[in-house]
Length: 237
Image (tube, rainbow, N blue to C red; front, side, top):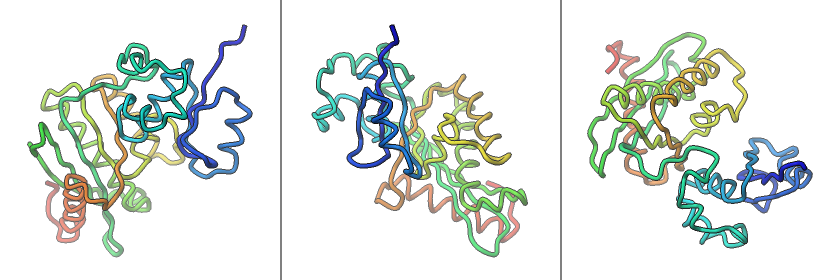
């Protein structure tokens, strides 16, 4: 007997988010919808927990907010990560905020990283890259470089779990393979993240750009400083 699947649709034809148990209904949601985000699961609990993760909240709170999606779900299962298909840590040791920047006329892209633990900044730094073909990707290259350099620092400091905050979806979707890698830079980023995720448990958290999140705003300022450092010919920070 074919095993039942649940399709969690985070971005698609409205109304979303949605949990569907029919692939044809799922296809209607995602067909001809640019940037559709969805994933299949063996349990409804795992599907709902995925949507919660994409929404940047915990599964129980998400279930209480979206009661229409939570019918038949045992909230206790949402609190036990062993019952979830994907590896979402309940808590992480440190928060990493990353951002990228680009400015016309400067053949470089900047990045900013802010490491936060228990509500306090423990480190912040910026830098830039100037690979000629990567410059064509503008701030996206900075976003990826920020994630790479930030996670290197997380590993060097001895942390085993991190919440990675970003405002560009590719940071997560290229890392997980949800998005296709259409150039050497996104492909290299994906391969690097595969290796890192074997060593560090990463919780991806999407935040809205310029929405008042002080650590994200701080990373944005640092990324711009990285671009200016490139402009003035300074060494990377």
